[in-house]
Image 1 (tube, rainbow, N blue to C red):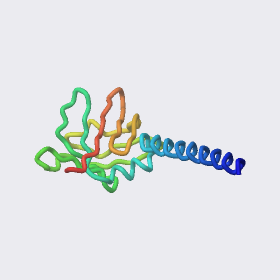
Image 2 (cartoon, one colour):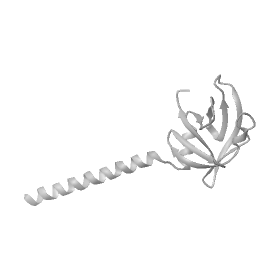
Image 3 (cartoon, rainbow, N blue to C red):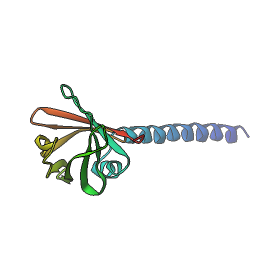
Length: 132
């Protein structure tokens, strides 16, 4: 009986440790995602851009590889497209208020509700806004 209790305690402790490690892995994976997850996240909700030194009052819909940019009055002020190539985020065909943002962007940070891009020393952040 003593051996049974001893084995039970060891198995219980081992199960607890393995469960903790699995939970920790899940938490870590929620923090940083890959291109496939970013693609899926972009189709959910609207995204609000913000950047140091820029006063954006815009919202962006990234569904279906399109970029549809709205101002604060919900008017379309720019349209274009986006894609991923070799792990880079590419904005193209923007000709309105975001025309200067066309090009290949490095993905600096990528979380489920936030991502950050950088190109030529310029950083731009996007935060998911499902309330819009």
